[in-house]
Structure formats: C-alpha cells, structure tokens
Image 1 (cartoon, rainbow, N blue to C red):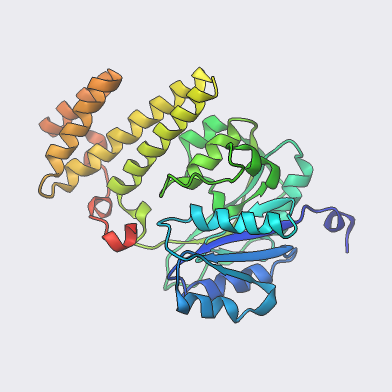
Image 2: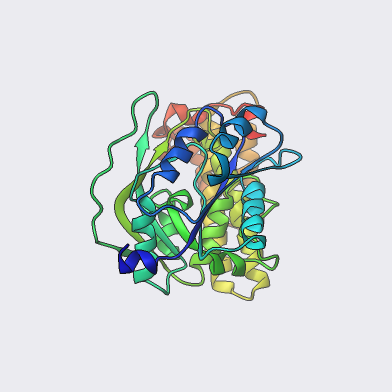
Length: 333
C-alpha cells in the first residue's frame, strides 16, 4: 500500500436507484473493481422495486441496500437518505453520487481522491466522462493525466454539462454546509438537484477538475434531460430557487447572476416549445416570454418572442429535432 493510498480520503458511494435492474449490476461491479475501492457503497431504492432490490442484494454485504417506502420523484430524496445512513453509521470523508447506470472506469476514484488530496481547499474534485450510446460497448478508458484545473462558479454556469456531479467526489463537510438542514439535496426540487448543490458549493470555493475521462455516461433517449422543454423548464425553477437562497443569505451579486441565468433558461425553454409546435405550445411559449418581460423587465424576452413570430430566431431553428418531443409522464414521475 502506497503512502498516498494510506492517506486518501475515505469515500462513500451514495447511489439512488429505481427501475434500474437492467443497469445497476454493471455499475456496482465497476464500483467494486476500483483500483482504490470506496469505503462503503450504499444504494437507496426510491420506493418498492423488487427487481432492482434483488440485483443489489445479490452483491451481499459489500453493498448496503435501503428501500424507501414510496417513490420521491427524483434522485435527491434517496441520495439524502444514503448520506443520512452513512453519517449515522460511521461517516466518510467524501461522497460520490454515481447514478445507477454509470460505469466508472477502474481508476476513477483513485484519480478523484488524489485531486482532493492535492487541493485541500476544493470542495469537489471532478473527472471528465465519455458519452456512451448503448447497445454499443462502453468506451475504453485511457491512462490518467496529471493535469488539473480550477473549476469556478462562473465556468460551471457557462458550461454546466462539461463536468457532472455524478463523476466527482465531494467533501462531506461541503455537503453539510450548503443548507440549514445539513443534507446536500433540496427535497423541493425534483430535477436539477445536482445543479443546485453544485452552485451552492462553488459559490463558496472553486472546485478542481481534470479533463481525463473517468467514466462512461450512458445516453438514454427517454431521459428528462433529452427534452429541451423539460430540461430548461427545470433549470429555470432551480435558478429561481437559488436566487431566493442567495437573497436570504445577503449576497446580491449572486442573486443577480441567478436571475440572469433564470432568464436565459426561460428563453431556451420557450424556444423549444415554439419549435415543437404541438397544440398549445406556441401560446404557452408566448405567455412564458410575455410574463418574463412583465416581471423581469428584460427586453431580451420580448425580442425573442418577436423573432420567433417572424421566423428569424437563429437559435431556435438550429435546435435538434430530438429536443422537441414530449416527455412521458412515467419518465417524469
């Protein structure tokens, strides 16, 4: 055992799962095969799901399994339950919130925890990730690089898809400090909980990241984020919630930033609604933009509405047709 390994932060995997029996086995095998394994792995199933529970239970004592009495509608609730369980039964130095269909490469935790050790001021350490389109085989991992860079709040807000919470390791103390209740995720947000937590952490101190790709990110055509309307509407709600949080905290400069990003998310959602053009979508997009102009006095929303009506909005016409579909209620729930 090397000196670095002896002093590496202890890590607890806090994984949410629901209807994941077809994917979670591969994810758990990849976790247990890490060159620097987690101290504990906790899977919380978001409501009764016998098939997923059977897969998790087959891993025996190496994977702890909890089942919530009912579905909470998003990963934040079961992740909070996993963190609560870890804290009450012997906490760890850091948490990792891998999803139940992610495939971490063998050196993912080793690289991420090394970053935390080398950057003790950073609340979070990220690796990059490969996009994976099943049924293709997962991409092959490459050797890690040593280059790391700071990851600030401004950079995250401009390029939030470049580094994801799933492929990071978060100091447990940073999770405790983000909200009064001491738990990382906002139970009121069904979507964009990762975004909310990340903004709160990076508002206090920059994270650290490497461009090395440490995991395979499964692309699912039925996911919430695959619909532009659903994804940007959720981002709007998260930005508004964060704006209220920073207002209560007495940080007007961050209130202004979140208000700006809320307006941007609203206009993106409106563009997707307009281009999708199902019954009622264009009136809904018009109301969204008009309400925003009335409340925020932002002329950009009125300008977007006029350009959409004239067929001159280049951002809307450049959007992928795949983003304009409806989301199945079962997927949202």
